[in-house]
Length: 153
Ligand code: FES
Image (cartoon, rainbow, N blue to C red; front, side, top):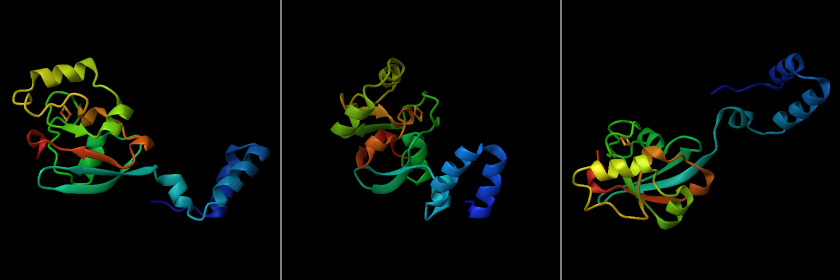
């Protein structure tokens, strides 16, 4: 993570900006107590993944997929095809509020659910989604996400 000094910011801005834009940007960037957070870190939200045996609380970056962030935080979810929509091993159950936020699965996602063997007993209408197809958004802060047994690592 890089930390920029006020001098470096000033030098850079004078090269690339007009004077009026320069002063606005300089004020905005140097008013931050922790500039590296503003420059390098995406917004993060809190998520909970859980299974029948385990619980994982972690922070996820907005804009990434749920699967990517879960795997990065060592959540015990398979996600074998890593988001290529062919394996169904990232199937999760979302809490009601989160499901309303992310919406229904696409037709392609539904096809994957239809083709998956052994999923009929764990598929829950209005809750089941492939977490590799869900983008983390601010609205999902505090989401509770269940990992059914066929998605465990
Ligand atoms: S990781 Fe394979 S379908 Fe989501």
